[in-house]
Length: 421
Image (cartoon, rainbow, N blue to C red; front, side, top):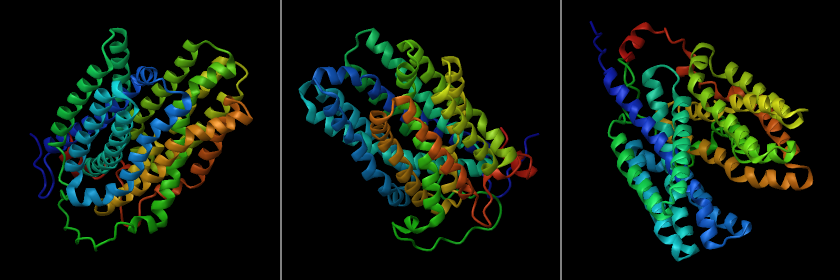
């Protein structure tokens, strides 16, 4: 006989719907990004862009994201996570369609479209992380890293669809407009099952309304800033792996392009597996011990990849590297949202700091590679993961706040019975 939810608790079906909607938001964001990335070579060739000019065009995405990220917190406070994700996904689709329709006519429409794409992605990313943390609270167990695994699966799906479109000679305009239409339908539909941002967590007493806070309040909190640095270190390690592992395998070990692609695929696969199975470790052992061990894995993996005497050992390095960086970013987002009433502002700050690594990482590695080699430049990953290991305690929940990943799954039993499927 199914148990009756306690007063104030949400029905299990309601929470399951919120989980499903959050997966759709994460996967849709990944699909959007990789759909554009999969057709970038054709857009570049049509516009005859040199590497330097292409880099300047791609800065439009960064500019849009950098504007959106710090503004996301106030926007979420005013509009809520549901409306923010829905509206920003539509804005992204407008940007993607602008690129699709405008690129045959010149560079300017592409720059405008990419700026809108970055603007939509930045606020969308913060809002879906805030909602994911809220769902995690209602479940009473870790799930954030699985949402990020959903993003990874979305990028893989987008890349595979893009490869198929290229193989079938489908025009860029048709492909990207179709992708925008799918996202514009699926993501707002998925947000209909989002939880209200003020949904009660349990049958305990209601929390008092939070005191009014200025839009820059979270920027003055030492813990929030420290978590931001922690996330930046892991984001640098993740982004560097995404951008440089394949090239470093080819250049550093003299392999074929196929082997380089396989090393990149190995990194992505192990990172996705780490994000999918990581919640079990977080629920059993807590954030800090698990992340310290994973940081050590990442350090060992990066160093093994750089200094391995043979290619097979370098592949083992990519496995350890991928596992090591798998949970840092999602757990940092969860830590920023430990107190739901302040989650939007804090996650916005943490994301703004963390995304600096995704933006600055590729060019910094390129500059190091000019003086060293691409392979040796990747030792910087181990250095930053060492910094992350030293400040891991920053993700410990504030006093009086219990994070879902710090409580064993069987405690409390009555909560588990309410949230079980």
